[in-house]
Length: 183
Image 1 (tube, rainbow, N blue to C red):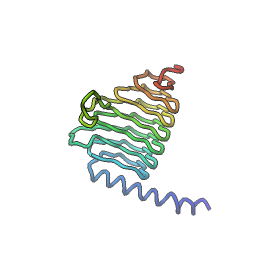
Image 2: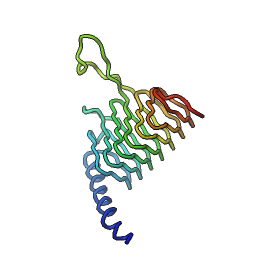
Image 3: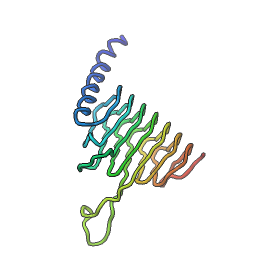
Image 4: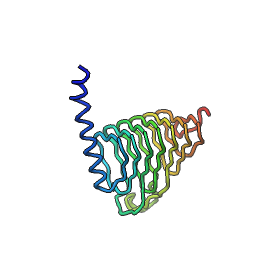
């Protein structure tokens, strides 16, 4: 019975994922081996580099700024798991290390909108920065990680946190804005 289930459900997803991987490569994305892509979206594939053995669940968005750029805006290491509806929104540069776990409904961005009087929000420039997430981190559901944040290796971010500043290796953080719960 198990082999029939695998044949009906896993094999078609594997075939689809290989097709998606090949398509992304043709569009210029640097992608390693054994990456699994369920249904999601990317743009500006040439600005994205992904290592080996990553898993992107339904609803992922890898979203570099929609303008020409000769360098990477998103770099992802090896063996990361991205649960449903993870959005990586890069105007500057976002780097994710190895063997991280991302819960569902996460938003990671490296930019902020500016604002002011007498100017439409669409006419304000973006403040661009960077985001770096180390290795072996666990990012809980519905986390927001904002511009100029660096998380050291082995960090744990509690569900629903809004991360507005950097935290060192081994930090357990949570809250709005996020603060250290334990080291």
